[in-house]
Length: 269
Image (cartoon, rainbow, N blue to C red; front, side):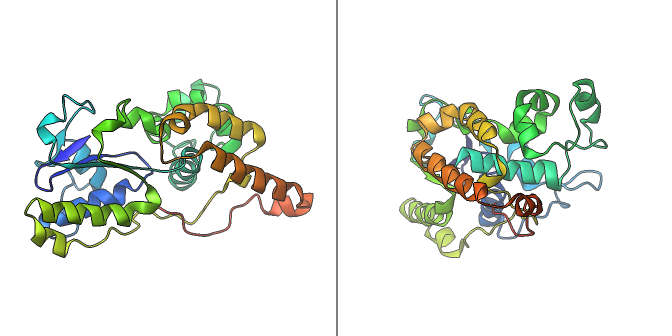
């Protein structure tokens, strides 16, 4: 968890769950200006806001273990985390890291490791799932973004005052404002704007892109998330997949082939 004394907040970030929006929100609340990646970068290279907060560059961020004893000094903080359905999070990760950033391409920094492992470059979503552990072994950034959410949250969820779904981000921000009013920071609460959607890409993948085998494989990989997190629902995602799978079965083969290329739309955070 990251403790932010200037904001009286404790936040556990989880990749692909609104982190860009929230870190940008925190920075603006503290400094009164938008985050500038080039201003905080080095040697002319931009530093993304995630690295600013979790890489030791933010003087006001403290790394705290997610254990009751470790957070005792931050008892008065509003401690929270956002989550989302694990499989939908995985699809978002695939779009961002594999399609948009092409981190599994032949010209990526991980190309040699991928080649030595005998894995294809630029795998489609089902090929990636089929060889998931092998790809994750080759690619530390992919592992970071695909790891189960419980790996970040830790086994003791009681250290958080609030665990909410990503869709409730604005509600959580209102709770943060109420917290600031309680701790004598009403002026900050009055000026804090709602976070915007920061991560965008021109592709969205839905559950229908997964084969039944891939879907079951991801359910197994994210077993702990579905078992432990009160904000995700195993019956809901199974029902959603069954619905789209039944619809896909009714599409003629020629139409299904055309739909294999995702439409150009905007994804969420």
